[in-house]
Length: 120
Image 1 (spheres, helix red, strand yellow):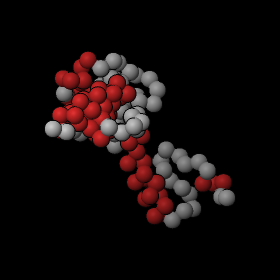
Image 2: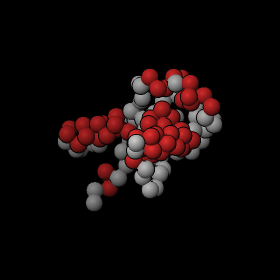
Image 3: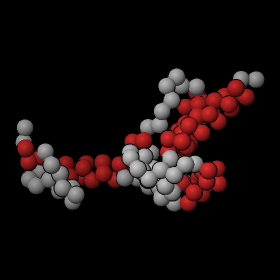
Image 4: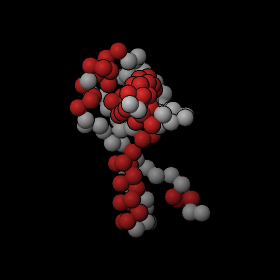
């Protein structure tokens, strides 16, 4: 194992490696640091969510968390939990400093309810 690859600086430059390795690392960083641009960031539905500025969910988009929960609820998945790593960041509008876990739970509940309406 090449120990010089064990740590990557914030500049994402891996000395001595080919450019395609550095391009892959930069692409990965951009994917992990996406920012939500969807209009749901301003939905008044999220005003009542609890504040959350700590832990893993910090700055994650609650609108996207709600949508993720809604889809899981609509499908009535057996083990509902938010995938924080799949959520983009957001500090805009009504989702700023709100709980993505609570947003997911609300979306899941709404999705389950709507799934019964579709059964006809």
